[in-house]
Image (cartoon, rainbow, N blue to C red; front, side, top):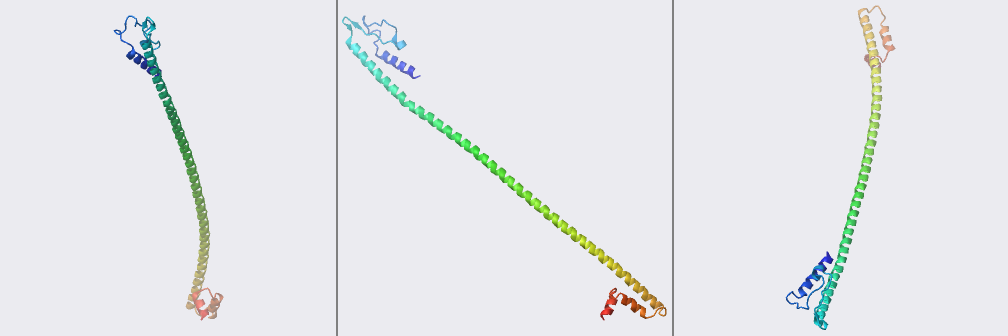
Length: 213
């Protein structure tokens, strides 16, 4: 921690500056706790007959002033690094907000795409159903028309068949009469075949041909 680092720095400075055991005279003893271990109590000064040694006191004051200067420098460094940490935290928050905004935008875009795709699918399904219904209607219409036309043709064919059968019956009847006349020319008058033919002028091809001639 920063406080521990400063305390170690003060102790190291004190150890470097304090005189060793061999350099202290009878009046240069330390009668208090070991300040180099605790880092809290300042060292006592050597005592002379007139009091503390002035030179030693001045030196100690100078050392303390230097310590204060260095501590102020360390404090300034810490204070200078604090905005950097704040800037880093602000940048981290800004990046987090950007990421959150990107995720929200991506989610909204995906949702919009899904809605558009669903709407497009519904439109195409409706269009296909409309075309199928239209095709079914056309098929039914064509089927009904074809059925009516088939019925008409069947009726016409039936009518033609009946007309054909009637004509065949007429032809057979006329042929039978002609054979009868050929076999027995005296039994009937010659005018009767003409009468029969005139009764049905359009019944046989030869009759129509004779009338046209």
